[in-house]
Amino acid sequence: MLSTLRSGFTSAVSRRAVPAARPSAEESRATLLERLYREHADRVYGLCLRMSGDTVRASELAQDVFVRAWEQLDRMKPGSDAGAWLWRLALVFVLLKRIAGLELSIVPTHPDGAGGLGFVKDMPKAFSLLAFATSAVVASRLAHDVLYHGVSLLSLKVVLGGFVVLVVVICIAPLLALARPLAAAKRRALLEYGALVGKHGRLVRQRWILGETPSDDAVLQAPEIGPVADTLALYEAVSRMRPVPFGKSTLLGIAVPTLIPILVLISTQVPIKEVLKKIVGALL
Image 1 (spheres, rainbow, N blue to C red):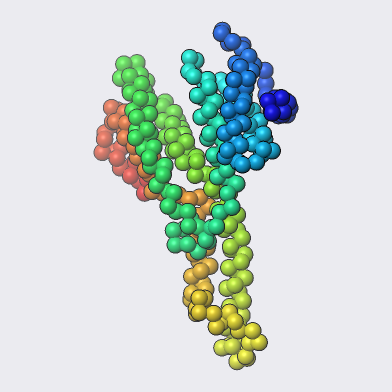
Image 2 (tube, helix red, strand yellow; image 1 turned 120 degrees about the horizontal axis):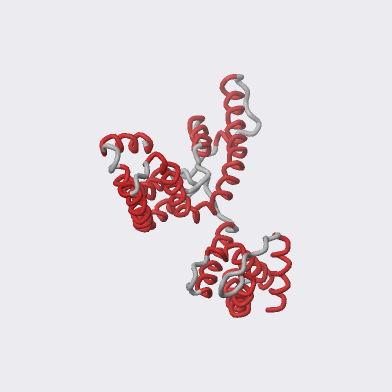
């Protein structure tokens, strides 16, 4: 199995055309990855096998994990546990792969506006404390530059804005794995429910406008569909369905804790009242 993974990993890396790495002081990037592969390939394969239940799929996932490790090796902090880093990477990678491949039973007319997946919208809020802490560290470092080195806040607006966006994106990233099936379900439902509303409308017109007796009035008699207003409500519910399983409240749950330390930083040069007015205006 190890030799099979090795050959697949080598060919996958060559297809990605990853640029040559800069050698480090202790061991080169290639040497470190080779050591990680030799020590942890069996464990990674075992994890992929347990989560996929298929030997072929497990081999493919394990190869993809090591390709991703090769691409992100520079992000590993010096002195950190390389095995633990690789294990976390494998867990997240395989989990998101499985989530993206789920055969979800999405209900386009569900009142939560997310096909019945609206219950996951509050999950990113669990990272609000982490977002606040990270923002506090960044804001305190920038505050030092502003107060003691004369750095202008205007020169930091791009950095601060990009930081807030980055934190929000990182926290909601796991939910983006559901965006593709939701978008596909909405496109399909718009066609299906559009055809249903059209058929219902034609039968209503045939009976009540033209005074004819429809040959097939099963749609008109169906109690679960109801009158014309109900069929239109079904289509409107589908059209309001979001392509992602979260809304403004989810984004605010991450953005607000992130903005609090930044707000304190901005208040060192800008009146707090004006800052609050601008933030409230941007959020609402």
